[in-house]
Length: 242
Image (cartoon, rainbow, N blue to C red; front, top):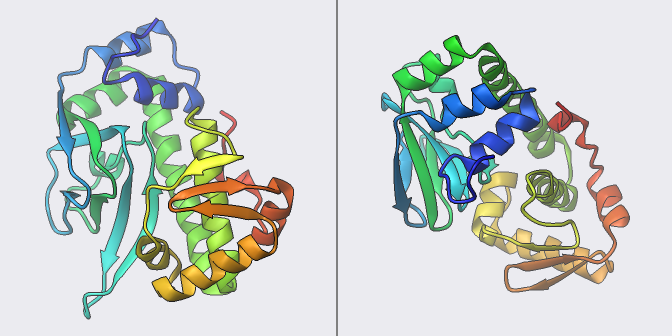
């Protein structure tokens, strides 16, 4: 059994959800060369145009993937939770086409890219898990395009929050009833194409509808079924069942 203090604990738990890995697969992950380090909120882990030589995975804390427009405006295209590999596409693509930034203080484990490629080749079930992870990322990106492009402001925010809550719960990091949000209203706005003022107004309307209670960054879902309906949320695109 994997130790609770292993830097790979969250990653192995995610791989188990993605594919039927066995004890030998887990042992191969635990044997990977690695280093562990801390990052402060707003630190960049990957910058657009760079050529990453290491894969990094979140042990604790949260991160955001983003693109910058020519005017400097930021569009967040995904949020990431503990256990996520933040640059799995660089196993196959040499140059980064986006930025990855931590949005809270975080602990990460870095593994040489060559070691991750060898692991995927030598342990086919883990290779399948990596592919499945990349494909689920693509599914989530498609949903985010729909969210920003075709949903109204309140629905966009509710949908984004539903996704975050469901993903955390699936990873054993919390429940639907009570969530501590790691992101600011500005970051919610950058993820949904809204201003922070508009975000605040929509959150207030969700609270006035009796769906949520907010205290700072603490979010209590009073009526989960109602909140999910308000978001038009269907978790099928997350492909949570391995």
